[in-house]
Image (cartoon, rainbow, N blue to C red; front, side, top):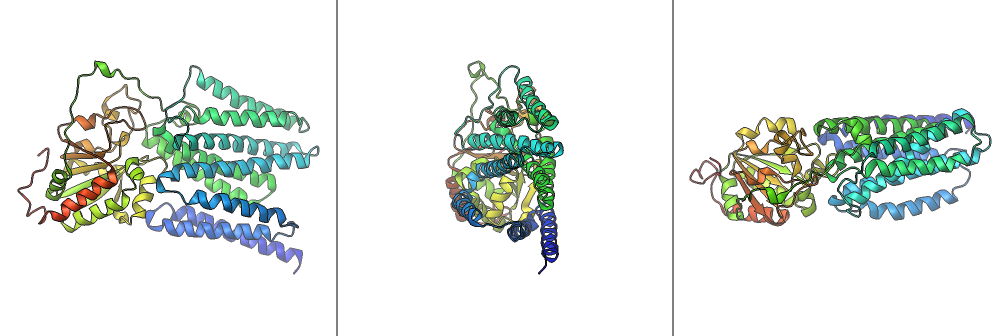
Length: 476
């Protein structure tokens, strides 16, 4: 087979891989086709890797095999984590991907030195800057999500000025190297400054806003991959990276809108600051609690129940028990739906993934805009480990750090029940006035255990909601 024929086959393989990547993005936009999207993305990635390995320019496979073995040794355990650790695993995946892109860019510079062109230097500089800041930013995000680092925002006076100055310094160094690519001493300085900017980028972010940060870092990693494609003259890398970068960017914008955040603040500002509170000046407030028996009686008497999952459900690994609760309520004639906030959990789509794992029907998962219109006619809103996304203070308290953030209007339901370990605040570090309302019942305990108790009690409750008309519903 001639070199031309081999090149044509490789190009055709890359084209098929690119088409599969595009279809994967399309199919992953819907829960019903997401698994198909993941499968075709895996096939596309495998085809691209296979085509690259078959390229005649690859003359030795020794180090490639070593890298595959090392990568598999790290990647397999990293992928077999609990669902609660998926956000930090995702951040680590972005860390490794951006580090790989950065190191290849560095290698390309030193291999080509001193014959790197100005245009080539511009490509390498952009790729290395974006890859470096994504590497350290993702590492900091993973540390926060794993709670190795404090989840609270780390802020200081003049922070934005410092951050933008550091980024500006990296850009100035890049321009200097484009003007004279042989200024090799500036190259490691540019890398160090970019790495430092990645730290400054994420440390001001609080835990409540980490889903948006993960989405944005994913966009940066895609852009770094696209720039690497230009450096290596790889069309498949350019297109795959552009798809990843653009989709991550669009998702970040959507999530900023869902959280009422400024997109520029997400990129440069400390938008997750914790509100200072003086608890001693507040009047003591009481909460109403209920036992599993009482909560089961209320649920059995309801006609419509909306379940609102949050990170507490993920921590307790309660999604399968929630499925049992869904099944038994449905059998009793109760209309059950799930209200999903765009930023519930610690990564985009976290709650959707958990509930899909438990085989909750897709048509029962309602977005915030859809479920909010139904909540005033809902008998019971059952909140499982969600805090800030249900905080009515976001609508009324102008001093709240989450003021203006769209929330699930659970306080408009006839009865609100909250499964929670304690009265501790959520990621934003603020109290939730929902817990003190007369219509709210606090169900204290581990989410998995308490939902299991509800299932057992409901199994013992006879009849349908219509037959159980004597049962009470709090707030009626």
